[in-house]
Length: 364
Image (tube, rainbow, N blue to C red):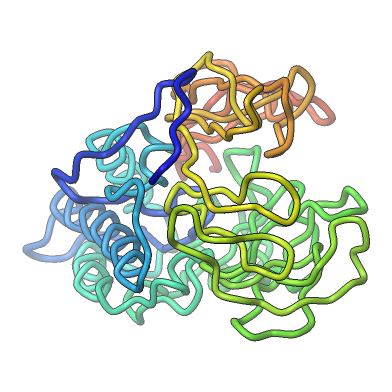
């Protein structure tokens, strides 16, 4: 039976309106274009937002159907990043509309509809791996050369706009290779921004299932984890192994981890850990590790200690709700912005700023 924590408000999805959120801050899809005859940007962006959400949901169901149990059948990502599906769809459409007329875009409203139609063919692993190997009509390059000012990746011939993590505008650049800093930029499709044992934030190529070179400083493909690695010894290698999708499955040690995208965490005493449900709570509830050793995460929010983003083992963390454009934000102690808004820092070296919707017009 699934264990529940009576001290927190555990939110469950009821299965109605089965959508799931697209990856807003980690997945780079070129949602940019000029007009097509007979296809409006409004229509195209609506269709694309729905396709993104639908595919995310199907992927969660696919994982669950392979012998597992989806604790949050409508998708943890939408719960954590948007709170509800209506907000997810509205914000995804806003991201698309704000970028559809950006200079140099490589696509168009008609192309966006083609992309939406191809979403169902996208591998679930690739989709969750920061948008690796996207369908053909979802990955068209832009026209701007390296060095040009950009607001969106889809404006660039390289399909990468560098320096936009905490800025409204960046610069077209080559996609980062493994080991490139992601302190101020995102990572390429198929990579993950990893805070390593050294404290550095680096883009790391996700390693395929069965890879025998993974360590605690690397990232395996979605739905898999590095079995045999050691957090205390980042040189120790392991094997990328499929993670468990079932509540109360054995995990940790010589067993695989648990699929966090299904709301599962590996909890319990050393040598007897099992996959248990994560409680999803609203700000300003406690999050990360709770006094009873259960785990909580935030609905439409982020988990912070008084001085930094929380790790899963922190015991003094609190949920801060995501805030919309125009609100104050802080990249170090929160709150963070509701996508597609970015926390644009007020000055170099500071962590405070204002949530701003990215627009190409801000980069002229």
